[in-house]
Length: 194
Length: 66
Image (cartoon, rainbow over the protein chains, first blue to last red):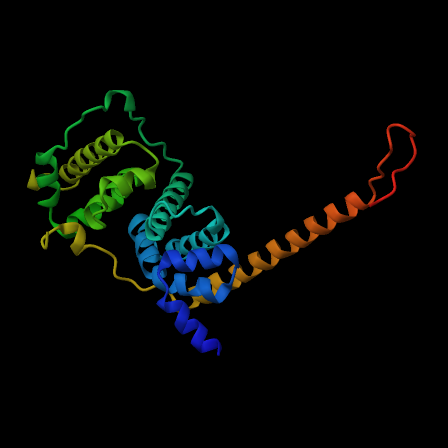
């Protein structure tokens, strides 16, 4: 009987499972959501932190956060988007606390209508993979996060806006700045390729 | 986008087996805690209101419960 219920739970969509969990908290049902998202959340944490032990701790805390805040999920976005938003923000907060590194202030008042810079995007995507990995490790966590969202996860701008809690022009500006800083770091680390 | 370097360096690690056990253990503990708090709060409000005496403003005496 228990196995058949678990099987039935697995046939539900994420949003259906969340609705059921919002009515009645159930750890076995939550385990189905864990199975669906744990690999992606863990990989995201590894990508953001570059540290497997820290990524394990963060994944644990993120799922606990998701469970505690399930009642606040309002079904306006996809459940996956909501989970990734918690993942990105929690990783960023932890990295900022650990590094005590203050990100550069971005004056968002001057960001209206900022175009996407195609040349910096082409330059970034033309970098050698193993060297890009090194560059990402050296970058500020905020820059790393926006670059991973855009080029690794290929999140649409609207999802990035939701995850970062900022407007469209601010997302585009952060992307532009992150690309420029990544290329500058690449040139600094590998001057032979400049 | 097949030569996108971000895709090449994407982590492919699987979460450790023990992690699920840890997460579900913590989730069960939190759920227990939430239920305990709910119970305590519900009991507290019931017992608090049980002590409330309704005074009739006209007579100044205790109102009879309906």
